[in-house]
Image 1 (cartoon, helix red, strand yellow):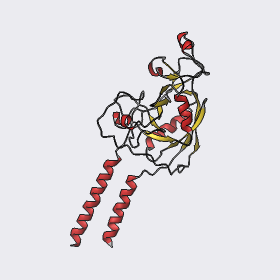
Image 2 (tube, one colour):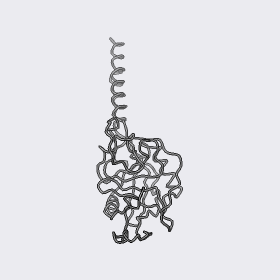
Image 3 (spheres, one colour):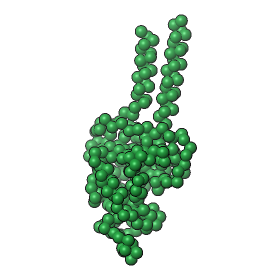
Image 4 (cartoon, rainbow, N blue to C red):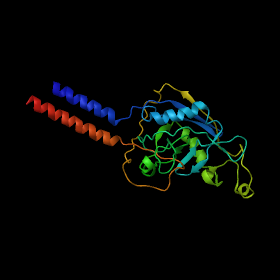
Length: 266
């Protein structure tokens, strides 16, 4: 009887480690081309989510601009604000957040951007994965910290942004998506304005219960320990995770405990 109880406890502990317990704050990203909602993974990546919500609650994302779009890769935002003038203003950032490389960069997930070669450098910028970018983004620079997932048909809005024409204004704006702006405009040095930028009017919390969409099952980052480094990093960012190592350790611990118990009973 005791032996069965011990085994049951070990299996329960193991099962809890294998699947992420997903509790969520839900935010809505409101843009001039449509809105989309994001389920945040509060319990899996708590520091990253708290960092993001600090910017949300401070109003830092009001009048933010989607400043980078790479078709088939990512759409990035969170770094620049349009205040009726160009060049854009940079978002005032706080202390960087510690990297939490737990989840995989699959289509529809959102992750933090950070500085190349510095896993713990994420501040305000984040991106939406347009495709399965796991093999590229999960292993490098400590992995890109996935901290949320786009809900419902929200990726239709993100895809619409990704389909816009892009223009090179240098630096972080080398792949800037613009509306109603042409190559002729660029050639004639026409300054883009609020009719052209993809502006995020605001990001707001619409459900703070942290039990919303608990049926989501985000994939673990299983590539965090691989050594491949790719040159296609999102500008300013990386993150990923090592749940498989914890599982192996738990299995080993369970076997040790069981063997010791059997020795004592023999």
